[in-house]
Length: 285
Ligand code: 7PJ
Image (cartoon, rainbow, N blue to C red; front, side, top):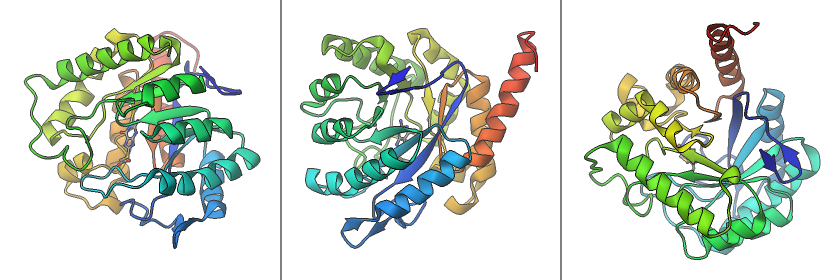
């Protein structure tokens, strides 16, 4: 997949490292953000570490999407994200993914070298489809129930979670195609934890293969999420092993990109899983 001037080989699983540049992201304590201005150097340092550990994509987010998080202004999001994109672009050989739903952020970051857009709202915001199309970049479309992270965990309900997620993603793929974003540029994500109970999340992971019917690459983000906390009764700083277990399952069910905090451990888990899968296809180790 062409990501700006870089190519991503989706015949192997790629690991996307999470880089939050928000003051309130729950699992890194907002340590990459300082007093109203982004610590781009710290963001670069963390990104470099993740690249050393085997990440081929870094996902930069300037809007907290944790349930109940306060909204940020467009200017604030730009102020957080742009300096980090600039520094990482200048220093590292990595695809820069932008975790955003904001048309202005798509446009501005694409201009300075972002390689992929990752929208938890699947380009549903006013002007998002048009802005994303104009960048020419690949887009990850994620499913979320409820309109915003602020209200999504209010009693999630589905008759059939797998079918409803697949139907939603199908509609968004069609909307993208109508707006001039070809299928070749789309990646799909069931949106673990976004308007889903533990049961919904476990069902989606078990039935991940069902999403292959849409014939597009799949991205999975379960790293350190509440579903792991609930299944294991672990706080957020003790969810690495549980996160790795979900990565192994996702990869064995055909996920193409894993979005994670713990890059080194995930790369090993993913490579080991791929080695076993290759054997089952009669390929050389
Ligand atoms: C996801 C995301 C995810 C995609 C977040 C967190 C919450 N983007 N952004 N998929 N999650 N594509 O990392 O816990 O699951 S933010």
